[in-house]
Amino acid sequence: MTDVQGFATYVNDHLDETVAELERYVTMESGSRDKAAVDRVGHAVSEAFSALGFTIERIAETECGDHLVARRSGGGAGRALALIHLDTVWPPGSLATNPCRVENGRVYGPGTRDMKGGWIVLLAALRALRAAGWDGLAETTVFMTGDEELGSPHGRPWIEKAAREADWALVMEPARENGGLVTRRGMVGAVSFAIRGAATHATNRHLGASAIVEAAHKILALEALTDVERGVLINVGIVEAGNARQVVPDRADLSIDLRAPNVAEADALIANVTRIANQTVVPGTRTVMSGGITRPAFETSAGTERLLSLAQECGRPLGLTLDGMYTRAGSDGNFTAALGVPTLDGLGPEGGDGASRRENILLESVPRRAALLAGIIAGLPGLLESNSSDG
Image 1 (cartoon, rainbow, N blue to C red):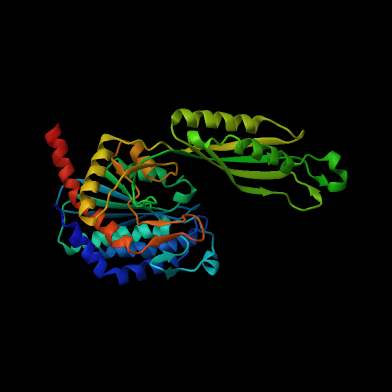
Image 2 (image 1 turned 90 degrees about the vertical axis):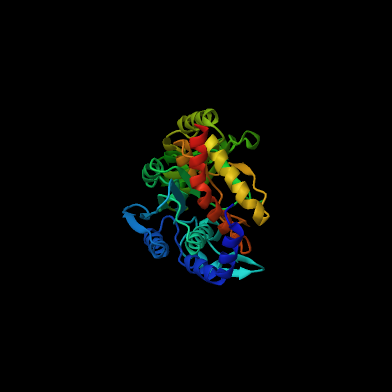
């Protein structure tokens, strides 16, 4: 049995340095649409992997943050792929009103839970394995996505390329509220409506066609598609429209988030959204729809179940009871799971209030989550052996 308690002791002994490292990353803002900031924090975290013996490859992008790939060869068997992302949902300047801070055993600040806390859990686990002299994999790869919060439109093909060369994928998204791991995720879509009308002065409104009024009708129709019990969710998250208060607006742009539990529901949802796009309420307006499903379903597989069993075995000495859970949220793990790669998600720290100004991680969870991850990694070669004996 792997000495997970020893891993926890090692991480706990170095917890002050780990917290300082997390604070450094959090105070380097990296909102998805700020390429320079994403690249800056990517350089910082890649230095930490370099210090662990990884070589770093940069995949340059022009429209989003660069992706980074850290690789290290070992003397054992099996190829593990760990997934983290460098971007957050928080725009530049968020630290001014939501500073990085430690309060009542929790670390707060933009991006702590999603997912800079996951970076430090991964780094702490790798450091604990190095301190123990463990070198049981043939290759360890860490893929750092630069546009995950945008749906990984540029990162996806590179993630899938790395996944095809891996035996397992370990995703450092945060743990669920009860500490559970993620073994299944729904499908995710991103759709845009470009609504165009005719501008005129408000005093001559009969000559114009209001794109905002058309957008209002479409927003209500879109939101009405939500069916929480079926797991179908629609959120119009961004509305950009108009130019001046006294002008009938000739443009409105909607950014729409879609969630569905499976392929059939996703197909039906896209059909309904397309129908709304094609319907015109305000004469003289027109709508162009773009986008679609961006993340395929992450279904539980036999390989994922074996990873979960390994995690449960490693968690018991740490006092952890770990369930495999479904979540409607997507991650880069959707891509690896859809390719048939055994994928275990939610390996980051425990915390709460994701995507809010109270976003946080529970500090005491870091040693146990890092120890759990170290134990899982150390147990991966054994899964190859069990697969061989089963076959």
